[in-house]
Image 1 (cartoon, rainbow, N blue to C red):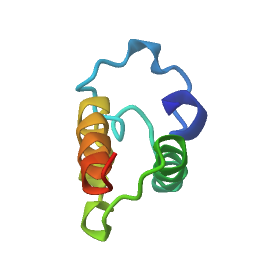
Image 2: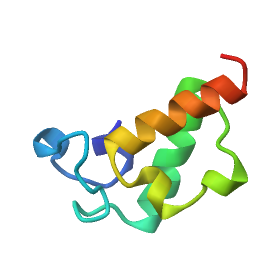
Image 3: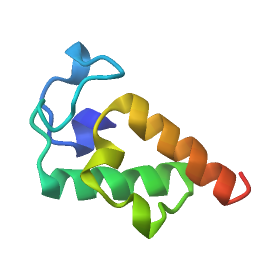
Image 4: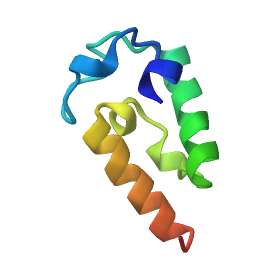
Length: 74
């Protein structure tokens, strides 16, 4: 999903804590990734979570998805 939506050509070398911004993700690509995550997991990120930090790493994204799922009773 990161390769498809975050604008990172080769995500295979990324670790869970790799900085996606440093790896080449742009602000436009981050919006695409955010929307894809919401669609894929049937969640909606809170307005307060719409920040660069929310999508900083795969680890952070996973934590945010889990939190959003809990908030929406999933």
